[in-house]
Amino acid sequence: MTTSSVEYQKEDKPDDGVILVMGMEEAQKRSFVQLFTQATVEIGIGLGFFSSPRPRRYLCHLPNDSRNFWLAYAPGIAFKRFQEHEALEELSGWLIQLCEHKTKLRGIIYMQSIHDRIDITSLRYLQIFRKLYGENNLECVALVTTRWDTVDKTLGLQREQHLNTIYGFWKDLISKGAQTFRHDEEQISGQKIILSLLNRNRNIECRIQREMIDQKKTLAETTAGLEVLGQIEKVRVQHENEVSLIKRSRVLTNTEEVVTQGQLSEWIMKSHEAHIQSLAREQEVERSLVKYGDALCVLRYEMYEAMCESDRAVLAAVQKTKEAHEDLFKAQMEEQRRAHAQAQENWQTREAEQGATLKKQQEQITQLMQQVQALSEQLLEERRQRRLEMREHADRQEWEIDRLRHMLERQSLQANPPVSDVSDLSDG
Figure 1 (tube, rainbow, N blue to C red):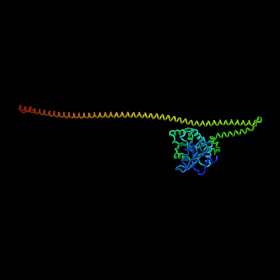
Figure 2: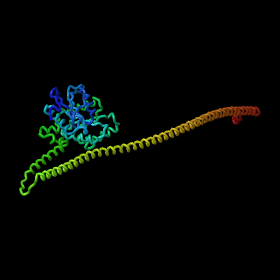
Figure 3: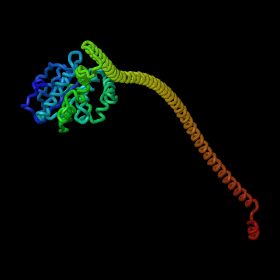
């Protein structure tokens, strides 16, 4: 790999380092980088499982922040057009040059569209990402979901939960320190993601950098290389061993057996064909295992989504039943309220009628009491008058009796005058 193939410029390098933006969605990554740079972010041209395997870097800055930094845009996978090993070679060379120029790799932003379901291509990309960067620097990895405005909120939350909780997707990355974010295509959410990486003030050393620089491994010997280039290297080594065996077999030490050149060539060809067939069978088995593993992961995801869909249907039925019960309860409560209001109205009517009747009775009693009082007063007055009349009559009778007694006494005195004093005393 040449230095020109990764196109790294040593001048005007900011001290705040580089943040690498990766993921499947081309437009989302380009629009993210465009939020923080004045340059025009272009679609790269190149080879590899990236649409351009060569990361393109752009000088960026944040509002109200004096720090400058690079955003390096690594385009996404395109298996049908390019070869994986070419893209891995370009990207690993770019990472090695970061170390050679002592440029700090501050963090990695891995983007996943919440609109798209996880498929085998996405799993393959994520698998290569893990092999390339290792597991020692996941605190400086931001796992970002995008395109939230293109999906229903409930579906988006469910897919986000799948990513965060299913092993094989993001669960193991999150458990080892990776952070998750939501990006709504606005600068505010993007600024939050970048600040979370810049504020850690760490220099990431990827696994492939340690293996190629510190351990002096070739690209094919690295973990990522074994993932992508392992089969190619394995076939090459086996072919070299086979050629060496053929060269050694040309020197025959057994003098008792005469072997012609044609017989030796035929034996070598048959051995070579058998070995090639054995390698082909091994490769087919390994491809089947990889395909089976990827398909199993996708099937697990689809099963999880089917379970969630079933759960949504159950929840919808429960919600519908709950709403029906609530409607029935409201109808019953409304009926009870109307019955209570009617009963209260009837009670108030009866109370009013009873009150009117009672008032009328009270008025009648009052009238009767007044009549009784008037009769009582009249009787008392009549009794008082009779008593006065009876007293006057008694006084007149007593006066008349006294008058008659005095008159009788006078008549008696006149008829029988007194004879002597003694007689007067005795009469007295």
